Amino acid sequence: MTLRVIWGIFCVLSLVTAFGPVRMLKLPLWSRILVGFFFFLAAQGYLLQKLFDASVMCPDKLPFWLLVPAKWGDIITLMTGVVSLLWIGLRLIRVKCPPTIPLIAGISLGTIMLWLAVRQPPVQEYIFEIPNLPSSAEGLRVAIVADLHIDCWRGQTWCEGFVNQLNEQKPDLVLFTGDQVDGKIAFRQKDLAPLEKIEAPLGKFVISGNHEFMYEAEAYLRYYQALGLTVLDGKTAAVSGLTLIGLPDSRSLTNYESLPILESMMATLPKDACTFLLVHKPGIAVNADELGVDVQFSGHTHGGQFPGLATLMKRFNNGFVRGFYTLPNGLRLFVAPGSASWIGFPYRLYSSELSIFTLKRAT
Image 1: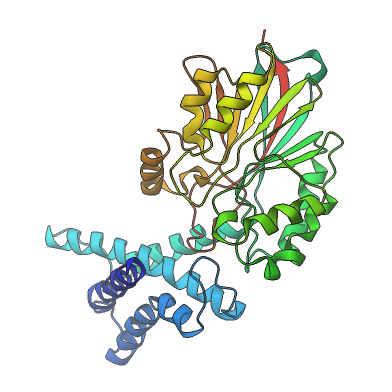
Image 2: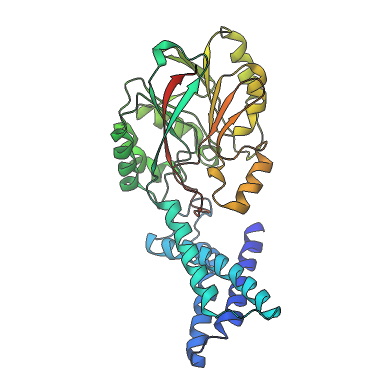
């Protein structure tokens, strides 16, 4: 029902564009009809997926040559429609603006947002100062891989490129914070296979995200192990004086059912342990701070993706959406912007990134 409503909104926006700025173009009537029909056609991505019985979560059944224009059509419909509404508002208050402006702006902005979501993420380096960092961990390079979302668009070739870029950073330790994949495992095994080539002498650790649980979570977790990734769901691991803690996720977008697991694990650890918590959703940081966790790495929010969505993400994640936060009891939280985006809504203005940390003891 929700998807039908969204499709209806997109159709209305396409008509706003067609009967707004397109109608006012200085072109022959047949040309304006053709351009208006183009925008209405661009809004039919939902119907296209229904025609091929393709899942909205990951439309593997939709041929790639149709998937790309479908996703591009969705975003240019949205952006052109919104800008056209602004253009109509300006005309109502007698502000002159050429009708080509909303068309060019909407198409350009939509194209950029799609490209920013599906490109290889840029590398972002951080110096991370931690008060009780053990000397054995001083200078370690830690890669945080969040929300990789390998899918029917970003397949094996994309994953190989990502792994090559990751290995070039020479990380000592690689930590995945969930949502590594979309779609059924039968479609994704070859696409995920390059993860086996990640080079990290101190280990490669992974936890589940809510998107693993959209499909075949147990099968995916077993496959991660087969690729040489250590699944840390509900477990701890000692690495170079650090205590890694991993929490499992669930299909829920907001709940933090793994809190009792964290409480029980923290009760068994020495008080002077330097604890690094891996958990997909960042909102649990409030509880982790009270329990004495030192550092938390999370993802899930994709950095907000763009301004309006970022505000909504904050409301559902205890105010955490992107970057660094220091909580009252000293927990340092980093919410990774994500290395890609979910294929169901692959659009960004806020950049993705591959986050690389160099650990330092705070003076």
